[in-house]
Amino acid sequence: MRVEVLILSLLWPWAVSAQGFAGLGTEVEGFAIPQRGVELSFPSDHGPHPDFRIEWWYLTATLNGADGRQYGLQWTLFRSALEPGDKPGWQSPQIWMGHAAVTTPDAHYFTERLSRGGIGQAGVSASPFLAWIDEWEMSGDPSGEMRLTAAGPEFAYSLDMVAKGPLVLHGDQGYSVKSQAGQASYYYSQPFLQVRGTLDLPDGPMAVTGSAWIDREWSSQPLSDDQTGWDWFSLVLDDNARVMAFRLRGSDDYTSGTWIAADGTATPLADGAIRVTPVQYASDKRAEIPVTWHLEIPSHGLDVKVSALNAGAWMDTSFPYWEGPMFVSGSHVGRGYLEMTGYR
Image (tube, rainbow, N blue to C red):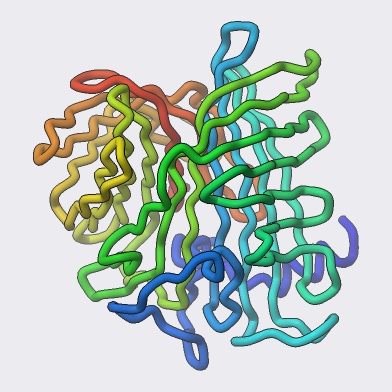
């Protein structure tokens, strides 16, 4: 292990608990707190918010290969702060972590990067938009054309993307509540990206097309004490509607989400409007993971089974979790992604 990676592992403020993985920790003194009624502003909010403790730029894609097979792809940049604000050079309290992955029907490739802020190895600029860690980059206009690159020991990818719909604000105009106690984040998405590019895999290059979804979220507030993890779905349906839905697991599960019409019109889904039930589990040396789900949103006639392309899509990174592409069948047909944390 490189010395700087060891140092970052020791300094990183995320513990192994679900709250730690969320990056929301237990201490918020001095950090900014999300407030209802704050209007998000673009392009500035595509950039970093160093006064908040945790933030991420998160892209997932469901892809069709020229070989007729289906693939999934993830690119994530996390920012976490040791203290509010920023300083130049090695004095910067901002720490960065990148994850990249490719999932096939029979393999899951992933890799991780860690960096300290302020020294040019990682960061985000709002205009023009550029998010990077080492040579990995997400760049362009989230409402227009974008480019994505990453590479690991067993894979690489390069994608061109174009937005075919608007940015979507979740919750109350971007203020997304996470518990009955009122913890919240700022949260928006770009769920309408069309994708074309190349995956470089052990068997060689593969041309792919498909759709991608970017999530942007930042906060400083801890989750509730009894919340042990979450199950987060992003689905693209056959009628071109989109669904974002999550369940935070606790003594009383908390659910929330957004129904996104084909034209981008967003309808918030309040706690209790979404029902998610695990149907089938996969055994893993780390945990029993629910890889098939029953998802219901009665207000929109959604009653579907959501099943993993590959049950082994475990991200065995410094802070492990499960993330992989999913199939949707039932009242609607489609594809999407599922992220699960806190299973152990």
